[in-house]
Length: 335
Figure (cartoon, rainbow, N blue to C red):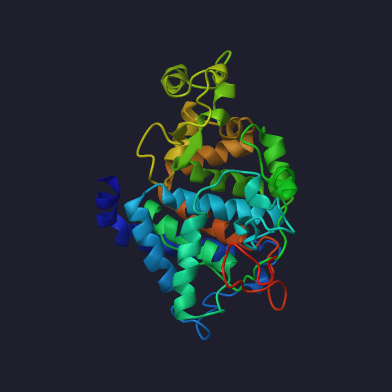
């Protein structure tokens, strides 16, 4: 099994990537909005077992279902890009709010996050926010699926608002071209480099044919590798034939459950799913970053770690803002 083999290499790779990530985060990454208010080891006094508890639940989940690592990272990304990293993506509908964010987009991992929260509450009731749990789970997914580790600052508080209408306003579409993507990331204090680096998360996980068929039918997108397109057509029939909900792996080239720089090799070869992937080669500066990440796996790990930390500081609630939810799917005063 690929993950078992990777685990044998983990200590050396993780130490190297961790050291590089620490250097990058300390020396070259400007803080996103709110990042300076977060702290490493935030729970060292109030809940010293918080991060270990999250890790002890997350790791078995991913070993049992390797696709869950990508699900956790995707949840974290979608949470941070809508209202900031405030766990608003996790809130269920209520009588007073029938359309929270999660009703606008199908995502996996909600039940898993609820289980992690229950485990943390059993150790430290009312101390650890769902927003931080989601950040820790995303970080731990990189450990299991990517074989590299990094520290994630914490101290986020949970939001009390969530609106489906915000999803379309802020989440980048897989059909976006480069300038739209750059603008979307800039609105959250992130750069074109962050865009390219974080897109590496498309090296693993699942998507659905509905997001791919626009590049296959009625004619194949000329930027897509023809052999790759022919293989993809066997998985995803024309839209009129149905099958848009069929799940397919983001990475059709190598192990679809490994977070790695393989994504950038796929982009260079025209073997990626989305317009938003292939468009990264349409401008000299982003193409250069694609090529550099493809050639330097450990450097990409360090950059990805730093970009995850930076994204994790987007529009965070800290101090007395927001709340620490008792459960992740409802505010403390839900009705």
